[in-house]
Length: 87
Image 1 (spheres, rainbow, N blue to C red):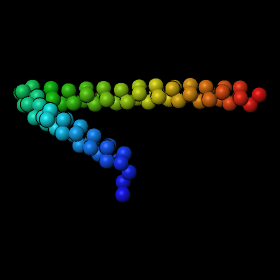
Image 2: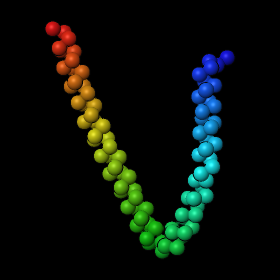
Image 3: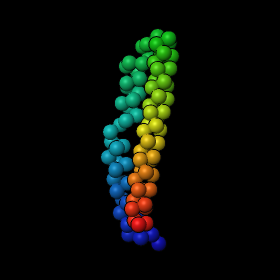
Image 4: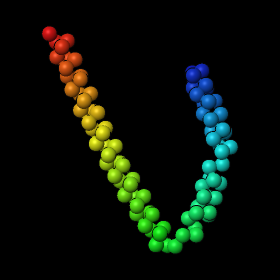
């Protein structure tokens, strides 16, 4: 038997899923593709795909670098706190 909290989270998830389902994201995406992307020549589709790939790769690299810097700063703070409490 699940605790009562699991039931609350399940009901919240179902409610949220129902609300988001009413937004018709798939229909909006299909409409966008039909209206703007289908009419483009193939060369532009390829160039836009390559550009989007480059942006995603560079963004991921930038995110990893910033996360690594944050991790290093947190380690330094933890070491300083441990040194201060050892005294």
